[in-house]
Image 1 (cartoon, rainbow, N blue to C red):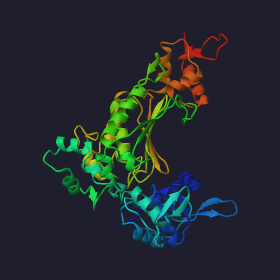
Image 2 (cartoon, rainbow, N blue to C red; image 1 turned 60 degrees about the horizontal axis):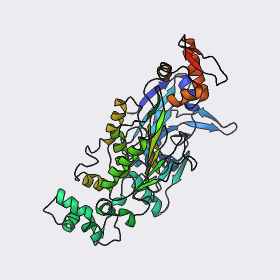
Image 3 (tube, one colour; image 1 turned 135 degrees about the vertical axis):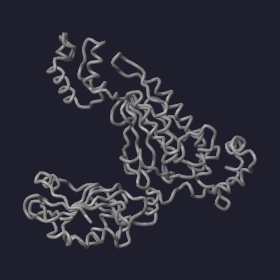
Image 4 (cartoon, helix red, strand yellow; image 1 turned 30 degrees about the horizontal axis):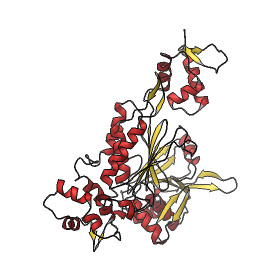
Length: 458
């Protein structure tokens, strides 16, 4: 039974004002089943979305109008298409929307979730959502990329054209066997773990147990660390400090070296704080867990390295590949899915493994930020990568930050306030100052040829 929801005139206008986008699509009641199935496939294979069936566009002025089904039963064919593509009740939900006033019919509101499997339209072709378009996935290459993005397949299981000694007689595997499984023969153990296919080691075997994975897997198995002396949205050659570091080696040592190098660089960064210039402090657990996640859960099929960018006000960790399966930026702290399940499982066997609490890494990172009264990391998904921003921004309100600063400073300018609060807009900071002035907390500071500033009210 699909619920029927009565909505107000204001809610109707809000729906009609929605623009078709990566997450929203509008269809008339006359939409062909094949076209409808493409939208469902595209939402399911991308990031999910909302579909309104019963909203038409007036060609004369490109205005959206409510033109729903006269009876709910008239939508049975559309619901049947949904049910043919996605199992009933799984990864999609439906409701009928009807205005409280007037008789403009029922709009079928469909919410589609991102699915762990590749979903095909009724023509047998899978689609993905790009902006407001449904794009067909064409060719084996594109389909394989989609499967890897969904977590259906993983590049970690591919064979690498190398001699077996690269993984069966390396310093890494010998040290590992002596520490972890002293009675096993390396080659026999690697075969038992399905890290060897025929006479070739897998990508996972090379990454975990080769002394130099970068020789066999160039441009997709290292970590690059950059220091930008700016808080701009993007770094540039002019703001790049020194030569970027390249961290290589097996994944186990690589993660430790990357975290240590990142911490060392951050300790040299000083920013303006409420008590003057002070060293930036990020929780070690946050840096460790986010870099570990970037390395273990990236898509190794993409020829790119993990990038760690250290700015004056934040650290960015970029991992190649989109979020896998049904994982989204909204549910990533609650849901679990390992793109590289073999790597995640086996690196946990190393002494003092980087992923001690498997599946809890990001939760630990967020909790550590809260302990230092810093804002939560921000997870951004791009076309072919995931970026986690770790901002050096206090949880305190902008008003409290300004007042705390003035407790030990004679005055504060708009520029200084923007640096302290992380507010990028000069106008918003001006509004903040006026709000504090109206509350009787601050007043204009005497000008002595300098910039306009504020001070605590005397």
